[in-house]
View (cartoon, rainbow, N blue to C red):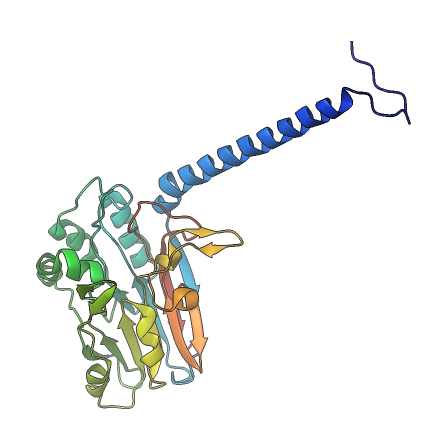
Length: 308
């Protein structure tokens, strides 16, 4: 039986030791709780969040987009087809969800394949491409390539998209829409296509040459896998759409993304960015890269409405 010291009594000789034991107990308990929280967070990031799917909606009002010229765009970025988190059933769900949005046009922003050390299942190029072929939109489905496509499987990705009649825009443009509702869809070549070592790359992008192909005053939507090009995009372009960053892929509360694959850091990491009246939207993407985990950036399809 333990008795409490009378109120106001001086501490006894054993009280300091008891206090030290109590503090050690609190610290040990806190460390254990932290460990459990970290383990639970890691499990969530690896086993739950990468398998989700959401639709993120934007309604930007770029000054160079004519008022009343309505256009809806579905954006699919960074599919990274392959296990463990982007198996065929997940790709089917993505296509079904995208079709349910009934957008005017669908754009695919590259990085169709998963190539990193933790891949558990390879999905052949014709298989994931056949699923993307089910995408439907009145103005079609259009694609660009990403750095992973260039680095690991350029011939296979090109061939798979061509086989299912999804056209690639590589430093090219197309005029879409009916009279009075027309717009230019422009697609850039990849900015990191050829690794040169020591963090240097040679791209195949040609922004001036691409824009030079535009020969009417209709508004322009630009597709670029990496958002870094945005610093050089002129006001002539109403909206730039990009992926590549995965929104950081791992974003910690109060800290933000742990790593952003951009020379501008977190400046163009994610979401709707406006600089000098120029508009950029960066998708968090769908698949994973480097490690098969996501935290704070669930997989997403974008649905964008212009002129609403």
